[in-house]
Length: 262
Ligand code: KIV
Image 1 (cartoon, protein in one colour):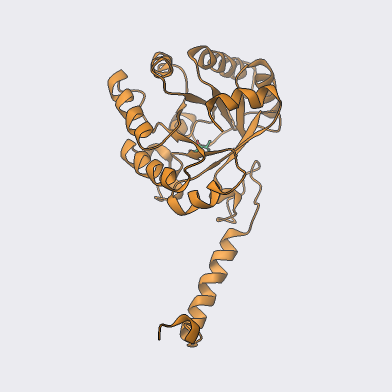
Image 2: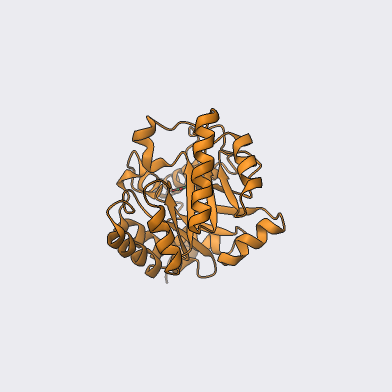
């Protein structure tokens, strides 16, 4: 998959799949999978580093994880998130952040929001950096939203979101993530826009879907928002494997002769 394939997939009505990936070992597995594209999301601040929001992701953190993912997934199209406020400190710092992430191995950058940085988005696109937009519940603005709340509900909010999506398309983004917006709005937007939309908590009418890998693997059985489907019982698999190892060590069943050097 390359950046041009996104438009082709929209034209042929073939859905696009994207999952987050933050490290080398999972990148190696995903590189061998059928998934279309990997997202080094700033959600890594929460999932990997244990922070309470994505506000804690930095450019250095994003570059380190992007490079690790690239080493593990040579063949995949990699999207990297521009982290919190990296677009809001002026053109030069934004372009420096962009060059760090692209040099770390990203194929494109994902940028949350539209108002106030459309000119920088357009400059990046003109400079040869493919940009993916992200609207709706943009987690970097969680404090401004007063929590993780569905966005675009009601005619005024829907109209604002629609305007923002049109402006991003105008600025040159090649695809747009829609997070936690009513399914009807996401469907209408996906039909109107010429660029593909990739939804998370945005219903079935978008041109693709994205999930956080650890969420879809069920690594936290208690995290089950409405939009999430657990495709595995990852927590139980890891928990049981580690407990079995522990029991084998205590009972002196591990290692056996075949697992020891002569
Ligand atoms: O950082 C992330 O994981 C994301 C997805 C939720 C779209 O931006």
